[in-house]
Length: 325
Image (cartoon, rainbow, N blue to C red):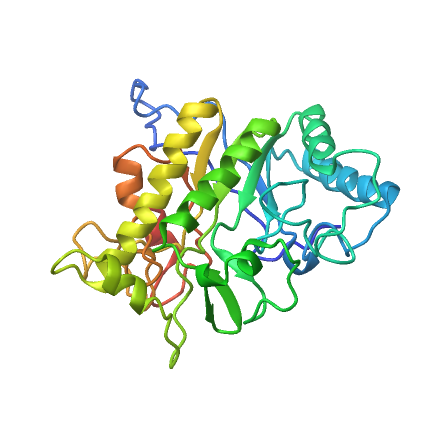
């Protein structure tokens, strides 16, 4: 059975229909959506959902994925969002990353399968009539603060100057153009070799702020920022460039593949910006993770945005109902 925690379950309509009066004549603007987007996140990091542990044999691997698909089909989901690149590694053969430690017993060791696991997963997913969205964590470099446990050809091991240790993790520095280019190349490799329906990023861009800790990208900032540009504006520019670059690459090499993001649920509070939500969140995507999702939508860089709304209707700062309006 899947671990249906709030971090892995996503059941949202692709768009919200406006209420239709029983006596009013429906118009295109008031008709309900023809099809909802009903998706489930399947997390591989720390073996949260799938696979259940590293080193499964081929039969166990296939049986677990079949169980995921069967449960989703019975619950009438129509898409699955699968974490394929959890920490700079990959659940598929890649020239840009080692095999994931959450798939195999040791990072970089190829599984003893006589098939490509991702190709097989995608084909079986489509057999069930489900879309396959490839979930990538573009900037997570490792789950410990150093590179010693990484495979020798892990990008953070090959280029230690690309990563910043922060909160006992490693993060790729998006202020570096080679880092952004690496992410774009990862996306290009994936959509060129696999029949995915979408590429999906979650809420992790710059890391969540931790009291007393500093994300040390100061040297990159001083080398690259424009005159008068604040650190915050410079960081948002870096993420904008990453998102735009991925979008342009997808449009060029696989225009049929959609690009979606599932950011932190509050873009900005209305006290910070009149376009913000009626919330008082101490954390916002724009100010803390430097993710300006509104700009990405306005520029057409992403095809869909699914905010992560993990609050109750009674939450004093971010009530669920207000965030839906």
